[in-house]
Image (cartoon, rainbow, N blue to C red; front, side, top):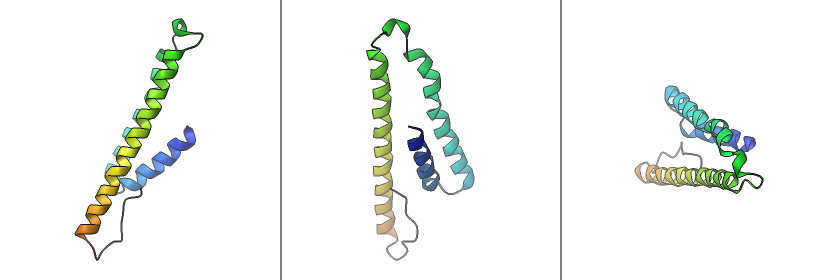
Length: 99
């Protein structure tokens, strides 16, 4: 999970590249949201749900699926923006969003 998070931070950093203040705010927001799992984790592993912890695992799986869906949504949005830039600036294709 942590290796994926580092890759996601690098992708987000290259996606939101200018101005630097906007990139810093985006990375801070991503980092803040990613750390909510550390807070919520204490509350979803309830002793009463043990020993199987089916509800806890369901919550973890739902969070992982939600992360994948948000990443795929961002990827499709960036692909649409790349297509729009290609149509608007056919002669100048120096910069593109990384998908």
